[in-house]
Length: 159
Image 1: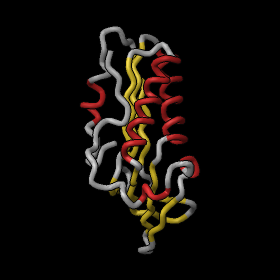
Image 2: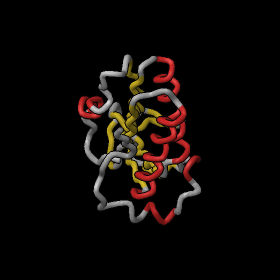
Image 3: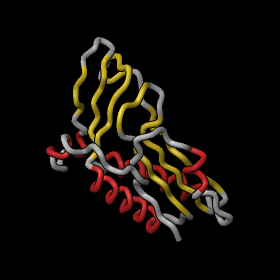
């Protein structure tokens, strides 16, 4: 999890290994509409400890399942404007097929399993929490105490 804008070059550094012939990345951006309503930004809150753990677990699973060299997963928290990177996944591998498949696996699992809530800010001044359909199993109380934590990497693995 990261409360500051992501340094994409820094995130890539850990993935740039001699054995890796390719690198696949997915960036999720804040878009300007949600359910047909114009949005000028949003806020993400997470259940920090659980998000960290789940992110690390997903990265470990990807490393086990696919012939990849390294994987990194990062999700922003806090206020984001339209166009900013909200989620970033990077995978390096000796061969491209594994990199593509592992990247897809990590982003899909992050969306389903990492407890992050989203508050949309609409252009008309309205704002509302958007229930992330995928994280309703997490304790709802977490929404209120998800502040004031250190923000480290969601998932990281070193050999």
